[in-house]
Length: 139
Image 1 (cartoon, one colour):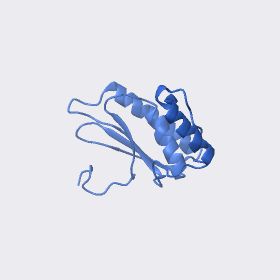
Image 2 (cartoon, rainbow, N blue to C red; image 1 turned 30 degrees about the horizontal axis):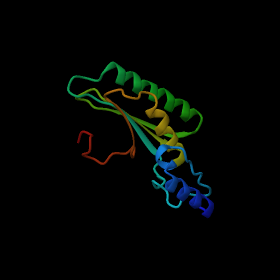
Image 3 (cartoon, rainbow, N blue to C red; image 1 turned 90 degrees about the vertical axis):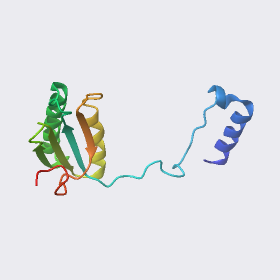
C-alpha cells in the first residue's frame, strides 16, 4: 500500500466512513503477501460416488458432462491424459485428467466444479491421477 492509500485509509477510519461503507481504498501494485500459494498440481479428478444407495442420476449426469468437457479439452490439448476408473462395489466412477500446465489445471478445476454446483454425490478435486496401492483401489 502506498503512502497516499495509507492516508486515505486513515482518513476513512477516523471519519467513520469505513464502517458505513462510504470509503473505498484502491490498492495499487502487487499485494504484500499472496493469500494462497500458487499450486503446481496439474491433475484434477471428478467423482460420482454412492452413499450406500447407488449413484444418483444427477451425479451420473454431472460426471458425464465432466467426461465430455475433458474430452473436448483433450482435443484442444489443454488436457494430456484422461484416466477413468470405477468402484466395483458401489458403482461410483472417477475421471482424472492431467492438464498441460498448473494454470490450466486450476482453470479446469473451477470450470468442472461449475458444471454441477450443489449436486450431491459429485465432487471435483485436485489430486494425482495415479493412486497409491491400497488407497481406494482393489488389491
